[in-house]
Image (cartoon, rainbow, N blue to C red; front, side, top):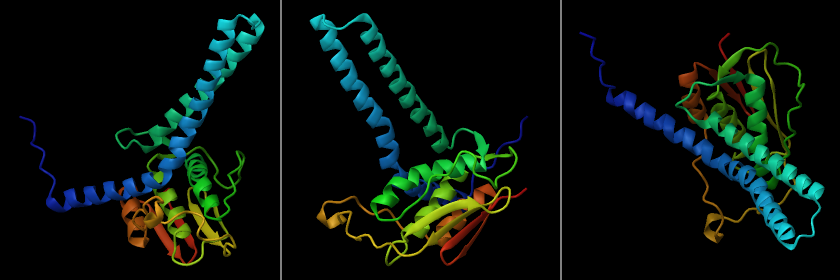
Length: 232
């Protein structure tokens, strides 16, 4: 007879729930950008199909113009499909693996728009950014931790940092660094009391360490710097 699997202990269940809550806190911060990236090309495509339908109904569109419009719609569909595929990075029920550079680039692209609204600059990672060498693949859930490190530094009490950078810390490490003090007004986003979005729970050092534990990753925080070190 096959051996029976032991039920998870209460401490294991509590840890799993804590992990899920922290992952949700990270996802909620990125959700506005994820939603925009899908909805924006969808709105453009919808407008394009309405114009195409109207012009075809009026009979005043040349065939080559119709083909050009259809090709534009196809491009927008491909863009939507790409953004939908990106959602796999958040699915913990799959076991996709990516390079550290790919996940770091995705984290920057997701965090950058909201940080810029708050007055913190964040440069996108170049396709050929040096430092992460080789093609070693790591679990896609590392994205949660890199984003949490970015939000941890961006949401510290007091003035927002002027900029946050994500850079290599060795072949498989990630360094997130906050620099300077933003001169942008800190009331650019309305407070929850004024109808603005609710603030998600703070991602403190304990949260980063908890997110790192299932990955077997080391996290070190020294002031405005977070170093994430992956095992070789």
